[in-house]
Image (cartoon, rainbow, N blue to C red; front, top):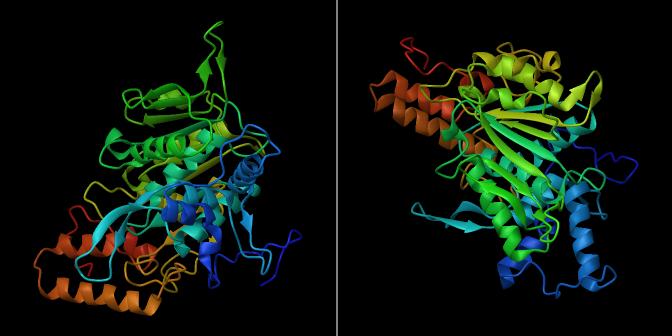
Length: 399
């Protein structure tokens, strides 16, 4: 593959390559799985100690990514942090009856690609949007983006007073039943227990949906530490809190259930940019397939990315003639479907498509509920057009 000046392969989002030896990018996670520790080195404040060198290298990888020098393959800093410091619930076992267990993430090519998409958008001063099938780890990855910036900042130059915001139309999409802020809290608690990353907090509250790192000097009461923050805001009550904020990361959760998405986008844009100068990124993502979904605003952003400063990708996803030439990022149901990808996270697309189409066939001829089959297709879409189908009150023969 072609490489840039630093020796990294140039990622082609429209024609993805085959990932090999993905465990190379999970060294700390593999050590934790084997020993229950992220490292065997004893913590040492001396920066020249073996531990000091190790932790500095880990932080550098979380900021700038990790390159395999032998062939130029690499992951972004966000992906490295997620793979090595963010345990998730995942399926274990090869039989039909399996278990969901807490373990370190495995490589998924869909997440590999979306993190490269986000990284490229940030480098170009653009924003990002993702439409995805259900169960593709969107909230897990979103929580990892928040946790990394809360613990370490964005890079060596932006690592103090880093503000991060996640917003949704309702609080139930932010907190409760393993939503994004529940996972964010779990991730920062995990690193507080197992790493030497900053662990003390000035604020830690699900009630106010606010977290701030740092501590107060016992003698003077002065606030010290990085003072990085994460705040959750619901648009139906507290969207005014966004005005005047200056953040590095703004996540819009469940954008398909965000009827005021375009006005919210316009509200957030000045928080991360001024003219052509951009110091932060907006990342919106969502899934369709529920009765309350309203993809009118989301469809506008996804199919007209240039008009909203969203990094565009050639529309290689829709069937020819059914969509516009440009799109944002699409994570379809045939990528990383359970049982349909290898140890390196590379999807067996043919096997996945056969299974998806067989499920639709069985549903079509064994169900009389029109909305039921429409919901099934929208939640497990092969194309963006399927993902944005109207589910609620749809009496037309969509199938």
